Image (cartoon, rainbow, N blue to C red; front, top):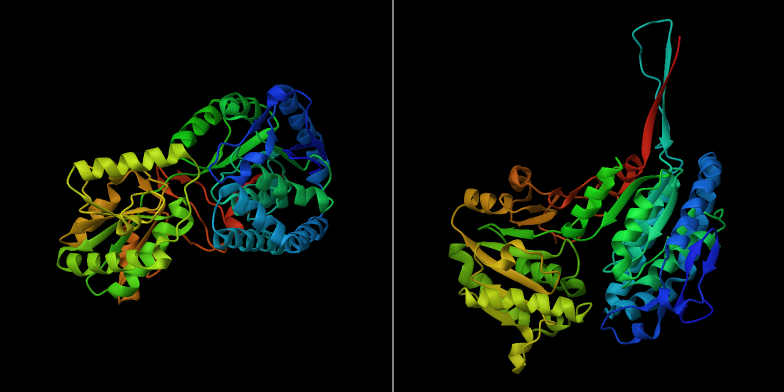
Length: 475
């Protein structure tokens, strides 16, 4: 970038208009991010991006897997060369810790390395199935869809920006990365890797819009005949709108939405290790991860011991080193959830209160969480975790499964193998036994049940999301 305005990328070119009305400043509280302006997409630019992607697809889909792999390997090399640059951008835009910025880089690298390796693994190969007649031959091909719209969020912008387009492009589709207005520099960085690696113009375009233009921009994109699928990572409320609008045009969607992620502590769990792991999973990136631990279910007989360990952990430096949430609107929402819990009888313990302060930007625990509290059903997306009590495992399973979300969960026990049948009873996209809720690994399928979405990112499951089958029968 040659100025402090983040451009769009359309047909291989940076786009910045002279019209100041289409340029905006991100609304974050990270301080340094406010010096950057962003070019918002206009209806005309949206049309140009669609035309570019549409024109690039026929040629891109015909590239050999080896050609694609060479280009993807170049993306890997560029990403490694620019590691410190990416980490700096993420830290500046989000106001996050250097640890979270580094995690973003390494996770982004894992995603693109794995996609690169899978291109020539046979994942794009078809089948020759048996037919009813011995005189016929059937061929089943895996074809790309066309243009894929990837909508990435701000909270893990590098890894989720890469995830939204990498497998789709590797499968032979063209992609439009619609970045977040809260992390435009990071998402531009991701799209620019593909351009600098030598991908043909139009294979990866990058757009971002002003917040008030979100609905109109999405409708313009999803209604275009060339856009054949959308993937979205974000809130359940926005996911509903996206699914509804996409359904109107008969476009499939891949959705990874909100979560209310549980940790089920069994009676034989190592409480000290469990308490430490749970708080780390609740407070990483200030709880701004869709798989962060939200609710801990503890046996009644262990309540006192577990809560004591949690309080001790809150007093330690490692627990309170939580950076601020993304903006004041999030702060206000989190405070509202805490106030509601306190009014309804819960004890709200904030790490900063140990110093006579109260701030939602520090790790916070709600003791005595009950179902009537707003926190029970609403994703906080902040450094807050609630502790609830159960009397029987069956009761705990019922409490978990009646929740409208089903993204991730954890079970803590001394008997990992015996916990597998219990894990299968839980209506959740992933269940971690003796591990944090926030990490599934990029070799595994990732996605949710119920209102946490549908479809799967990760490894070969992601490739399948962006392919369609065609059957050819020769008689």
